[in-house]
Length: 502
Image 1 (cartoon, rainbow, N blue to C red):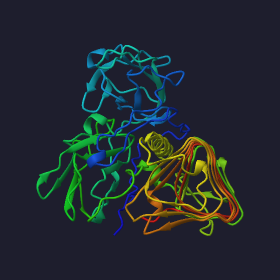
Image 2 (cartoon, rainbow, N blue to C red):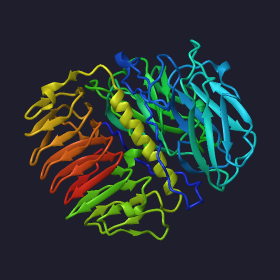
Image 3 (cartoon, rainbow, N blue to C red):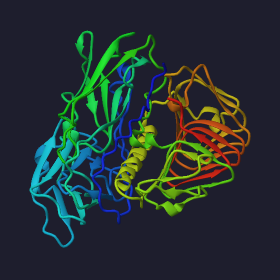
Image 4 (tube, helix red, strand yellow):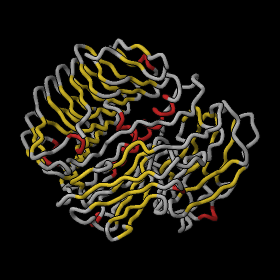
C-alpha cells in the first residue's frame, strides 16, 4: 500500500458565531524546515521573512516564524492565549510584559502572564481575564527581545486579530496523520506528522505529548510544530519492515487550553527501502482542497473538478462559472456534480468556515515557504530552465529563472519518492505537453513551488501539488492531477482537475 500523506478526517472545530467578518490571510510568510530523518535530520532551515518593515534582518537577530492566533484572523475565542514562535532561541529574560503586549483600540491594555518555552522557542501571553468580544486586538513583540547572543530584533513584530463572541470549550481534533493508521510500506527515512484541526499551543507539542514507539521501546527524536502540523523527526532512520505506534496525548492543548478529548494513537509498518528525494512538503489543512486561492477562482467551458475548492479572503462572489448554491447551513455551497464533486467554501460563509479558511490559507503559505527554503538542491539550473524531453529522478531541483516544458517530461521513481521543484519565476507548460509519471511515482509527492505565475497549456496533462505565489492558469482542455494552491487566482477553462490519489 502506498505511503498515504494526506488521509483526511475533516473534523474541524466550530467556535465561530459571528458571521459578519471576513477572513484575511496571514500576511507574513511563515517558514519551517522540514527534513527527513536519519542523515538529513539536522538540516533545518530558518524563516525567510520576519515581519520587519523592509523584509531584511541583521544576521542572528530573532525573527517571528508563526503566531497564534494568525494575523488578521477573525472570530477568535475570548479565552485565547496569544503566542509567537521564533526561528531560533531567544533570551527568556529579554521578553516580558514590556516586550510582549496586547491591546485593543478604546480598551485598557491587556494584562497577563508572559512565559517562554525554550524547547519550542515560543513566547506566550496569557491574559488575566477573557478578551472583549467583537474587538480588534493588536499584539506586539518589541525590539526588547534578544537572541541568546544578545542581538535584538530589528523591528517590532505586529499582528492583529478580531475576537468573536464566545468562550471556546471545544477540544481540538486530529485532522490527519502521515503515515496513516495501518499504513504499510512506509519510508524508513521520513518524519511522522499529524495535522490538527486548529492552531495549538506550541508549548504543549513536544516529545512528551508526541511520541513514537517500536519493538525496542521509545524512539528518540525531535518534535517541531509549524502551522497546524506537528512533526516527529527520528534521530535515526527507522528499522525495516517494523511496526511503529505514534501517540498524541491529552497534554496537547489548543490556544484556549482545551486538551484533546482522548489520546490519539495510530500504527504503521515500514517498508524495505528508504525513500529517495527530499522530505515531502506538509500542506497542513490546505491539503483539504484541490483548489485553494486568495482572490478568485473562475471557470468557463465544461470543467470537471473532483475535490473541495475554497477562497479566502475574497468572498463567494469571486468564485465564478460554477452556478453554485449555498447549503441551508450557509457554511458551504454545492454545484451540479458534472461540474464539481465536492464542496465550495468562501470567506463570507457562515462560521466556522471563515476561521477554517484562515487556517488553510496560513498553512498554504507555510507550505510554500517550506518548499522555497529547502537547501542543498540536487540539481541547479538544469537545462538552463528548459527541461523539455528530460527524465527527472527524485530530488530537489532549483532554478533562479522560469521553467519551460515544450515536450513531454518524465518523473521516474517509486511511490514513496519525492520531487520538489523550486522555480523563482514562472512555470510554463506548452500546449499538448504531458508530464509522465513512471516507476510508480505519485502526484501527491510532487511539489512545484513557483515564485511567479503558472500556465498549463491547452490539452496539457500535468501532475503534482502546485504552490504558486501568484496565479495559476489552466488553459482549455488541460488536465491536472494534483492541487492548485495559489496566493492570488486560479483560472480554469474546460479542465479536469482531480485531487491526487492517496
